[in-house]
Length: 250
Image 1 (cartoon, rainbow, N blue to C red):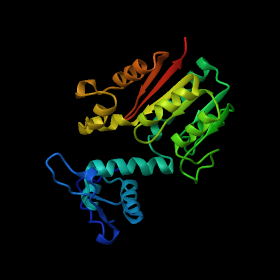
Image 2: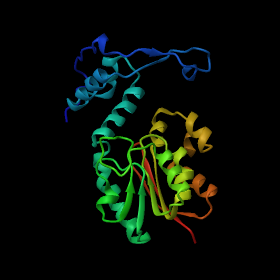
Image 3: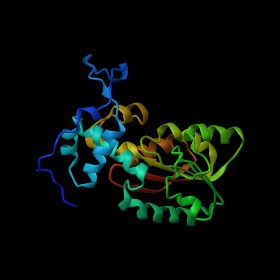
Image 4: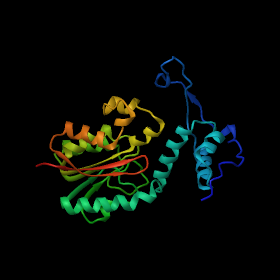
């Protein structure tokens, strides 16, 4: 597709811009607070139309008067919502899932972020699937941790638990581990921040303090150090994400 990086691109109309929010969360170390602008539906549509027309992210960011990182993250979310995020890697992901099925031979699966494709349900394995997007025909349309809390309270267990969120998987790992009996799959979307040399989040969560250690292997080792009965079966590193397959138990 043509990348129109050198062409002129008109500015988005001001009326498409959302209001500014000046939360303390946006205060920088030097005390400044530029705030954060709320995304509107008109702005989202404007951005995705430009994406579909082949414009580069820097040009789109200039058009909507945002940082490139902010636009990049929003585009990924919107692509995932409409089902074409990382489309070129989906078949590779499914191939690895198939390998894991052949190894684990699961009878039950919990798919916490099933998306529109609902891979596990379509494999014919007894699956409970969930997606917070209520337009997706899943068994549940809940926050993943709220669902897992509910299932843990009920005493439910699953041979495989798959957590494949958009964004960090960190807050879901404990519940997913406690619900799984044979295998655990974790997608690390934090890997995208490495491009921007941002260590703030992974420093707080995985103890990563330098870019050389900012790898899927480091995160996998952190997880296995915390849960000693997990063994790493496979790592798939894609653009901005990594997918870890763990076998649980001896």
